[in-house]
Length: 267
Image 1 (cartoon, rainbow, N blue to C red):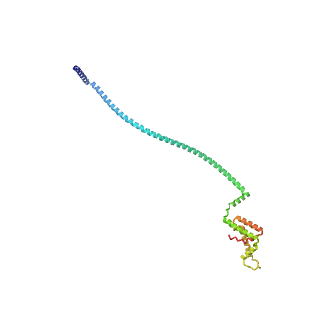
Image 2: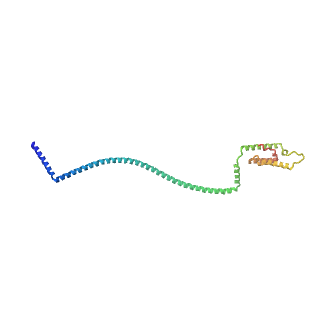
Image 3: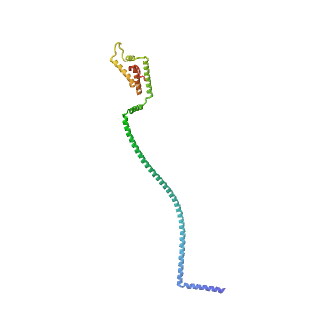
């Protein structure tokens, strides 16, 4: 056992001696230094690589966050873009519809203008024809008669009070004429009666003066004009009735003077 230990110790001493010998050689020292520098460089590169790796992991995490945020923004932008595209399409459709409506309205306006022009031409022709017809109709008796009838129809109708007044006066005239026809007062008695009220009494043999005679004629004319001109009944219907009654009374023997006894002022 001691021999083996001695051999091992001897070999170790030899290695140490060999190492010392090699360290004493400059070339070996230089080689070892180069290896040492190489090791230091490798250690530095490993440290840099570790640093780069950690920074790369951080960048990767940041990139993932950026991707996530960008994806969310992109999705929102895409939705907004789709909505804008749909709105734009709707606006374009509406614009196309408005353009078509505008075209249709323009065509309709042109058509209406043409129809209006035709109507105006027809109206001008009708006006010319009407003027010619009016010129021919002016000389036609039937047209003149129609114009007179239209004027009569367009006259305002009398009030009920006026009609009642006319009826009462006509009734008095009829009653007076009936009294005259049944043997009542004569025209001579009426004339003398009016003269007694209008002139002073005179002698039986005296003749009426010219003034009295003219006054009597004037009164007769006034009373007759009341019946003829319709002073009491101021409508053409009454004038026509009064004139007809006057003509019938004259033809039956009654003169204009026979109406002097009527009192037209009571109404």
